[in-house]
Image (tube, rainbow, N blue to C red; front, side):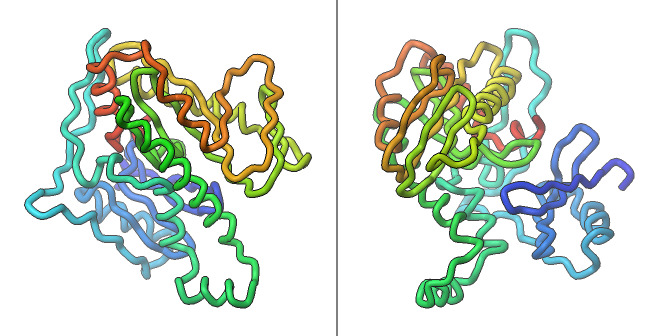
Length: 299
């Protein structure tokens, strides 16, 4: 048990405890309010539970491992080996448990709502009574990610691949990752129904409110994605940040350097014709790396 550590994490309304190996690999995590424990590495289950019970008490609920599809066993691939300079890492085939291609748009929000959100009956009652809920913004965000996900799905005939809800080792997730002939795009979805949005080089204002560091955060996220992918692919991977605003009535782009691509959801199709950044073989390699959950949780 001495090799495992517990790291608290709070963000986006979530309160979790992560159990990590010395190299930062997550083997389990717990949602503090519900005391639901998810085991990612079964061989550490006993030690992880013993550690988490020191924080949560003895009454915890263990979430079962993902079930395999009919005729398919859930395998546990070995972590990627260190990359030799100029050579890609040979990753094991992504499994049901670790394959991010299985994620639907809004995967992280769906998980949070399932673990902590109101029951369907309670949500219906709040609607009937027209009572606001702390979860309203979560459902709005989920609808926004779904709408952008539908637009991204339209790009597949042009050779693009898309992943949703890509977890980050330092917490949080990447809403969408688009991989194709024009490179890689780290896409951050912001849903502001009926709002007027102004976007500058680093900040954004919604309905003339307080500035929010949307553009700056998007650039940092793209840099993170590029670092992870290049460590495992063996070649330069161009990654650009994208901000997609959903449901806004007006979008004013005041940026002078345009270091972040800024779209409304229906404008995402502008990415489709882009080419010349990745070959077909490189697209396959980047996608094989990016869809592997452990690549991100170890970074």
